[in-house]
Image 1 (tube, helix red, strand yellow):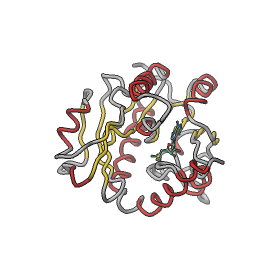
Image 2 (cartoon, helix red, strand yellow):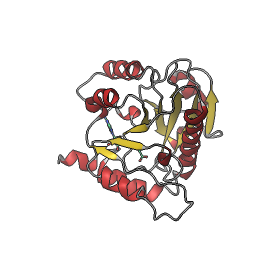
Image 3 (cartoon, protein in one colour):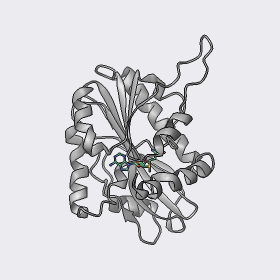
Length: 252
Ligand SMILES: C[S@@+](CC[C@H](N)C(=O)[O-])C[C@H]1O[C@@H](n2cnc3c(N)ncnc32)[C@H](O)[C@@H]1O
């Protein structure tokens, strides 16, 4: 196991230690917003047009620190999780382990099939094999800008191409758009909605007062006509990420 896998910024032991300390406190407002986003998507999957997906492919779920432990995953008959972090699987399975059930209880989450890889390597094959599974990018796409071997232009281009691979399928993503110092953020609103794309410049004008904000290169992840919401995630006391979330239906 490469040592970098144990200590990287958004994966590995340090990440899990921070997540353990923060997910019920500093992150709880953000986690509640993610839960609402997923439950709105779930309603769309259940009652919207077209066939309901059989299963769900989770990309970058980590230990599931930002995902609801109840009420979402159990609505899918199969869950496949893809994350290269070697520590994530055991933590995820512990947090989402089936509860002892009494008659009449809601069913618990299916145990995910865990694929310890990057989604770039395995998603095409998973899509071919599971033609009726929905796909959820779990706060992972904004992390792809940290790939030293590629130019930022190349990374942004590849992020903009993902939607082509997923055309004709139910999919959703919540991902970093910009991040910066909390002291430079304008946090008078913690969530807002938009029926159309929001450029990085417009977003920064709305949520940042001063300072340098990092562009996570995800402006073109969602198709233009996708309604979307923006949520503040105070990842630490010092830094805030603005997360964009949206889903795309099978028909569009
Ligand atoms: C910010 S964390 C996601 C937080 C997670 N959604 C949660 O609820 O705890 C990003 C995760 O993406 C994973 N990751 C990074 N690059 C990836 C890739 N190319 N494919 C799949 N997962 C990746 C990391 O290992 C890490 O677990």
